[in-house]
Image 1: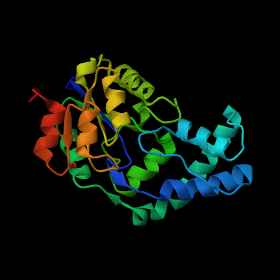
Image 2: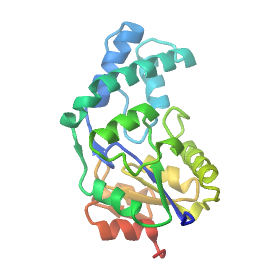
Image 3: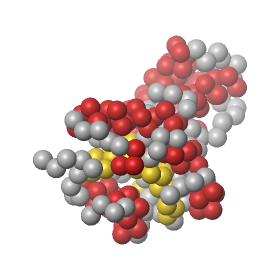
Length: 235
């Protein structure tokens, strides 16, 4: 068995898939079910975690963001996500190069692929499975948005899970975070990891470079460029 030498931590929304509008629709249903109120306003979702987003939504609608209320909202979100899972592919698309990149790293010995995403674990599975992007992602060791409102906290969680599962310590320089927002970049940099940004979301390549990304790509369609950004000097 090849000893892993790279841990690749993927973001989901606007990095691997484009499902814009789905989150607002799901929160509308979940908030009505949990709090009996109509969704009137939404915070910015880009780069943020579900814990932060849920707390903001509850507060802005006059509901105390207790742990109990947050988790009730999550259960409702998971339920509505699951109900839409069979038809979710019709609500969006896989982004260019996403599947090829995941497949390529799966055949490259020594690479472990998982997630650092603001999504909940269950919703992460639904979103990637809808576009057949789930096969090479180890969902068990990801860092998810239920953990913390502070996105950089998700990276060491994923690294710890991966290190324990594979019996090897992933040094910070061997960890690569791939995402589409300055928050993804900061999450990498705050943990000494490599930051690879894709300009497939609401932020421009210039904004992602200014945030400190080591590499900025237009998207994932240039597989050679993606491989170079992730692997560096490793063959």
